[in-house]
Length: 156
Image (tube, rainbow, N blue to C red; front, top):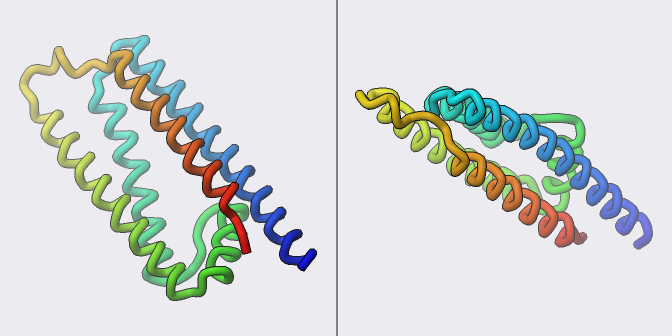
């Protein structure tokens, strides 16, 4: 029983470390968005960077769901290993497939939006404003709330 409790505490600690990694990525994204607003850069450049990141994440998740291998940082691999052991390989693969489909759909929609926006003839309205930064901040808060809830719900 104490061994299970110790494993759960270790996984929770690893999930907190993963949350710190995600927050570091969001800080970079936030600083990049401030740069785009401050220097009045066009939206489609920033969205292009986001689109590229989403496609990379979608490809990574698709690879994991097709091959069944765990992909990512060491922290992420350890967490996935725990979840794979806890839920079973079938349920873990099903979850990975759902994740890859969801992220893939979002990436496709963002790509369509980006292509549509880049074909627009009025490029004066395409500069980033403070609303873009607010959206990033809200996404950041939502990620933290969701991850904290998942960390708290980590049980045997």
